[in-house]
Figure 1: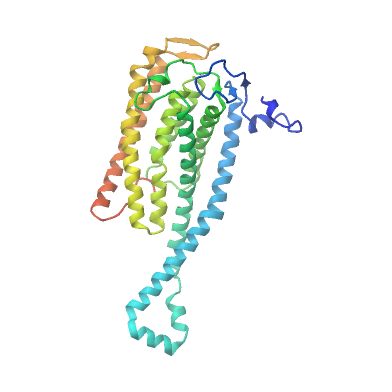
Figure 2: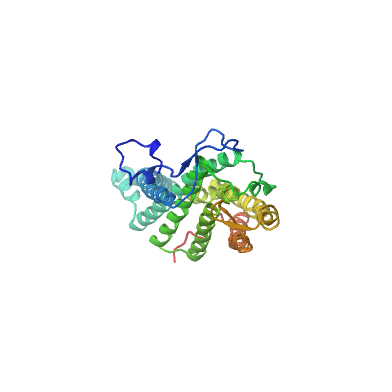
Length: 352
């Protein structure tokens, strides 16, 4: 436990939940994060994951209830009333004006009443907007965190051979360890949300994706393949900013901005997940076993066998297949944008 960085009054059983466990001495000549604290890995790391899940659940509800829902309700109500007012003026012309003079404020009150059906639609859009808001906040912050980690590691996106050199990469710098545990907590949190909320069209695809991603993160963490893991997570998170953003803009009826955000999402998905990600898969297939000796040694945290290599590559390829299926849907949506129908993400927004 990391007792050196916690107050004395804090109970010992709480310490693993609020600090990174297994602190060790900084390596003599680290190739990255030269001023950071360093840590080993172990089972107590799951305590930080639990804490992160709890914090995420609280933050998600706080942002939803006190930021995104109030804003969406105010904006959508305002836009609905403005559209009703404009429709009344444009539809009735001078007759509407004369009727208004005759009846005082009664005509205005009747025409600007929000119907039950409109109220239901407004409520649905408000809830959907708020749900997507958390994703935009998380992925934006986490992508910049991942970019910071990547820039401090001696690895390259186009030539990721460096992720295998010097294996195993232990101990871990504090930012790398926290980044990994935070990402793992997020996907476990997403699995909980998927099973708690109403199921949508791609429930099982999303569930499969999240489970494979979580297994890959935990496996690469405890098998010391953290550098390739950091690279993959940084690539994956970029496009995930723009899809929920496009949905939020759609719920606000900002069609042009929605379409622009969706096109940005599509292009970033294509580049990161079907171009740059392939470099990582290729390197895992050709470089990993060439650079890392085959050995299984708990004492040195060296875990490279044919089975381990094949297992990791198989899961990476499976992720690519799932993403290719999703990209087919994305291209169909993009076609609708081109012909003027607008972006409508049927991949995950509709409930079963």
